[in-house]
Image (cartoon, rainbow, N blue to C red; front, top):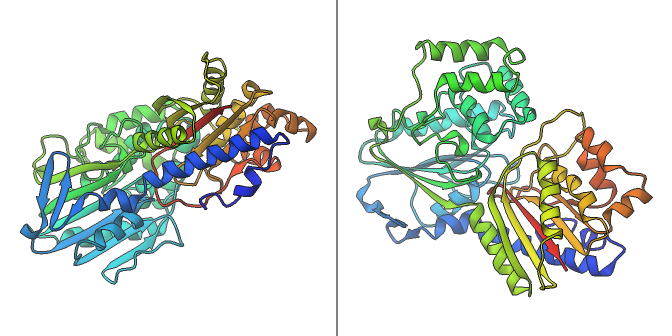
Length: 446
C-alpha cells in the first residue's frame, strides 16, 4: 500500500460518507502514481536492440560500449529498467533515497542530499564526470534525469556551504523553480548543458518531468540541454527577491564574473556540443492526471481536469480550487476535479510543512460543511522539508479543528501546516515514491 497511514486517513472524519470519499481519493492517487512509475516509463521505450520514441528510433547495436549516468528521485527505477534490457559497461546513479539501490555490479549508487545538496551530491557529480570522460565517439551515454537532480548532481563554482545557504534562501523566497534553476545553472560546472560539454559520444537522455510545461532546460537544471538563460538573469532574480544582500559574497562574485565575461556562458542552442545529444520526456504530470481521471471514471464519477500547469502561492491556490469546485454548477451528484502542477510557498514563519500541506489549510474555510474531500499530494512522497507527502481535508475538518482548538490561520502564519494536519491525523504519509512529476490535487464532491 502506497499510504503508510491508510487506515487512519479513511477513518479521520466522524461522518462515514466522507470517509468513503476519502477512500476513493486515495484509490485515485495510487492509480495515478502507478501510471508514472519510472521503471515502466523507461521500459516502454526499449524494444530489442532499439530505443524507441515517438519521432526517433535509435539502434543501440551501432555503439561499441554503453555507459549510464542518472540523477534524481526516479533514477533508481529508471536505471533498473535500462539494466534489465541493455548491457551497461559502467554507470553511476545519484538518488535521494537511502533505502534504494541499483542491483547491478556495474552501477554505483550514491545517496545525495535533497533539497539541499551535500558532500555526496558533489561526490556523485565527480563520479558521473569520470564516466562521461570515458565515453568515446563510438560509444553511447544514457543519461537518466528526474526531479531533484539539481540538488543531487552538484559541482558548484562556490564552496558547498555557500551554495547550501543560497539554496535554502531561494527555497523560502517564493521564487519559482525556473528562477531557482536559472541561478543554480550559473553557479555550476555541470548544469545548463555543461554536463555534455566535453562528451565525445552520442548522448540519449530519458527525462521524467517535474516542472510545469516540461521545459527541458529547467528540469534538473537542464544538464544535457541548451541554456537560454544568462548570468545577468540570475543576478536580477536575486534582486527581485531581495536576496542580493543576504546570499554569501561568493555568489555575487561568480555572477559578476560571468556578466563581465570572466566565466564563459552556459552552452546555447546552436552550440555543436548538442549535435549528437537527444532529449526525450518519458513521463510527466499530464500522464499522472490523465490516469487519475481514468480511475475516477472507473469508480463512477464524472470528472473535470482543471489544469496540469497549476502555479501560484499554495494557500491562495487551495482556496481558489475548493471555491471553484464547490460552486461549480452541475446536475451530476458525484464529480471529481483534478489539477496538477507546482505551487510555491513564501516562508515567513518557523514552522514545518510544504506546499501541499499549506494548500490544504488554505482551502479549509471553503470546504467547511460541504460533502467534499480535498487532497493535495507531492508525487515524490516528500512535501517540503517534512516527512509527509501532503494533506487531506473534508467538510468536517474545520469542526474537528475547533474541537481541538486549532486555528488554521495561525498555523498558516507560522508556515506550520504539518503540525496542524498531524494533530487531526490528516497527513498523507508514503515515504519516497521513487518518482516525481510535481503535485496532484484531487477534489471529490459526493
